[in-house]
Amino acid sequence: MVKKIFAKSYVALILCLMYAPIFVLIAFSFTTSTLIGDWSGFSLELYTSLFKNKEIMEALKNTVLIALSSAVVSTILGTLGAIGIFYCKKKVRRTFEFIGQIPILNPEIVTALSLTILFVFLGIKFNFITLMIGHIILTIPFVVLSITPKLKQMDSNVYEAALDLGAKPSTALRKVVIPEIIPGILSGFILAVTLSLDDYIITAFTRNNSFQTISTYVYGVTAKKGALPPTLRALTTIIFIVTLVLLILLNLKGKKKEVRR
Image 1 (tube, rainbow, N blue to C red):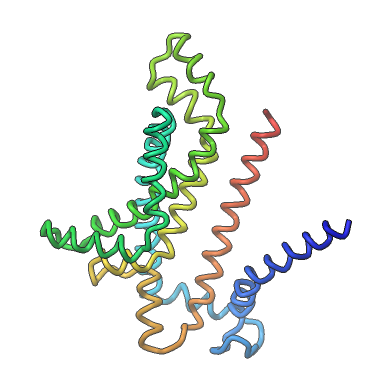
Image 2: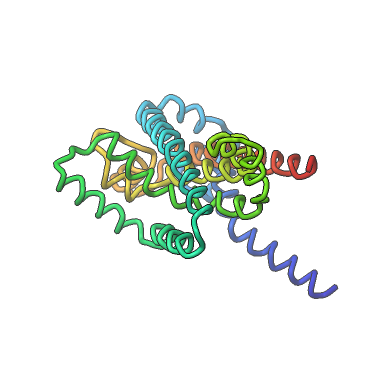
């Protein structure tokens, strides 16, 4: 009994330490005070100012555009890659799994510099495509990592049974394998979007200077003014709530599927 209470208290403490800064930021997004800690009364003025700020809205539009487009491509490639790796022989599969973990552990600055040198060497001008390539390379390993556990949980005999019953490999893949790993695919997509939204290093190295995202905008404004503009507190609150809602919906969908099974 004492161990359970201690364990629950420890987990609660860790969660408080993790989420307390976010909740403080959310609370102070409803006041106009410049400094966090100085409450000047409840107000929605920051949210009103946020949607009137053309620079932030443009940066937000660019950020969402690059996040969704790169996440779609990385999810498709990552899904195909995860399935291909899963159905390889054991030795080959372990080799590919090891290679796939390198980009996750590799410092992001190394990837950014490598891409920059590659684009310069090939004579490619930095534009939306180079930025998208950078984000795809960043997120693909995480998509594979999200889908692989679902493939391992799947009954491999179902795919073989579909082939024995006359289904083509492509048909069996589309109607048997894909439906079984949809929760992993959705998790990988959301993770790819999240990683792309807050990326700064690869974005800064692979973008055109005229293309602003939220991360580059925040860095530029903070460097000039020396502090975070109050309006961005409202923006970060909206991003956090949207991400939280998506995760809740995804988990509820996964639980419903388990109950049906």
